[in-house]
Length: 430
Image 1: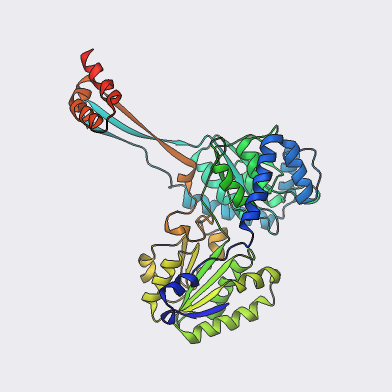
Image 2: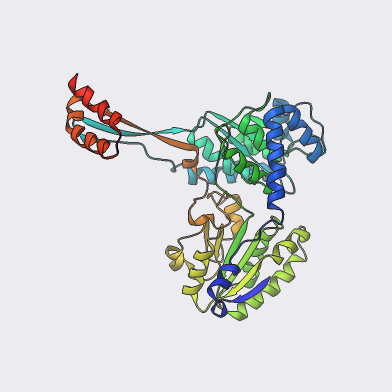
């Protein structure tokens, strides 16, 4: 990790210090992804199967997971794993059940009524990564809010293994969420298939779920196409920011930093400490712990892009955290509750030494699909609201229109839109 003292940095150095890692070949990735998207758009299942063979090293006859495979998945899972998935499902459902946009009606007057209706998105596609780590939790985090919202058509895409199978734990989580239509497709080709549809995979209105740089690029490409699909939120690699002081347990702080570093070579871990002594202890503990972890190659690459910052006090530490706008922000010190209201930019906040980021990733109840790359300044984490939309309704009587006619006509004329004015004046002459 690179080490900085905030008060010794210029404004431009501070900005550079908090910048995210970027992929070296963004342009090449976009170009390659666009080729995949256009191929799938033009050639459907044939292209999807071709890319599955090329990238996942398996030749598939059927892209869809069969009913038999779904049943078999449930029977092969150990009981303790089933129980863990069920507890996570129940906790996440409990937190999300009271979410959702609010419908309401308002009488502007006795002759003018306005209403806001809330309707679920009709068709959604849920992407669940399954490459280096089959993300069972992502199936729950996408599946549960879409289930509560009441989306009519839900499909899931997730990459298969070299034998053409899907991780049974992902299939079991999908079953709990009531998702029966699942396809053995991953990567940019899965995003393109859900956006435009193929002979086997239906098109959807909006696509949800995290993925690698190719998946992220594909989501952006299809969202910019009029015939494509909307995306849930812009995304970059996963990240965590841990704030520490003299009361911090360095073992806990190091573990939290490493828990995000293992996600992706481009993941970033940020430590902000009000104590140089504590910073040094945490860095030593990172070295001690990472030796025993399995994803060491990924962690090493991530830590090369990670940083530690010394702040003069907690007020400055909070200011730095808000400027960074982390996906996950961990207040890993005693009496952290008093600072929560000062955090205005973060995807999700973890308060105190006993609130590890892992709890939010899996089963505390909050959603782990969160804005990254600084987007926490203007985006929220995934919720039921993301699977809903609103439609406004208005009903005016003749008397109601008469009461607004002068206002409408004046504003229409002010804007030079006389057809708007005619739509009112002609009615009143009738």
